[in-house]
Length: 336
Image (cartoon, rainbow, N blue to C red):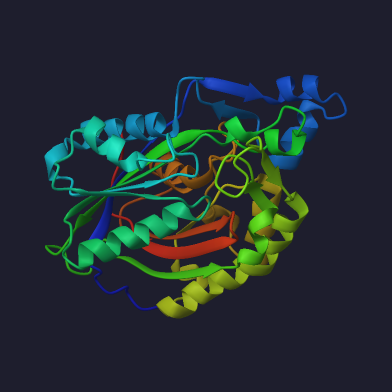
């Protein structure tokens, strides 16, 4: 057995997700691309249907609904939240930051700190680390880490590989100071990495300053991303365990970014994680970018796979290239 994680002064108190009502199912994709059957798409991606935001729903709306669900369920006074981090790569506007809009909509205090974190599939892990650091430093006491993206707005109808992967959702994570419970609910340690040579493997070139006149189109080099993940992520998992002075079996549950089933199966086997200690939430929403990890945590709690006292490894990776992994001592119980 490895050592018990030292108290970090902050704890993940609750998670909540919001999934919009729109759906893009495999049968519809198959009708667009007759060379691909619905069964082939499911076998290749592990996705049966993708959650799609309504035309008038933006990333902030997805995050807002998740945050309201969490605030109401946990009976939180919005005035007590003094840190809001919104992770998105599809903001409502170039400026102001969408977190400012969410601060007002949620009724948070004007004394709160709010900022956007424009990261993709690694974003929730990065955001969790930043929130923990700010709480540890005494700059805040109660944090909302929100995620939300509307990637499908960037997908061209003829691009079947991208259309088959991405869905849309929002999530909210509550992180609070836990100085009253030393050694309980610890967050961390973390391990991170960046390799900008992979910037063009998943990119939207148009609309920003470099190419303002180009159409916004999501371009994905799937084989290149797959090779990156197989090369980097097993080492990331083992680097995290080494930093924490733990063995693989000391972690009760692993929650990876839900990229696609084929990739996750390969990563699980390559890292040596047992199937019963690996969580999934992919089939009914698709790859929801920065929201996949908190959505999967929520599902694991509801199903009973994740219980208070368990140690969870969270692993995010993708666009950038960017990657990060961390550990959480889980404290939260069931959810209505």
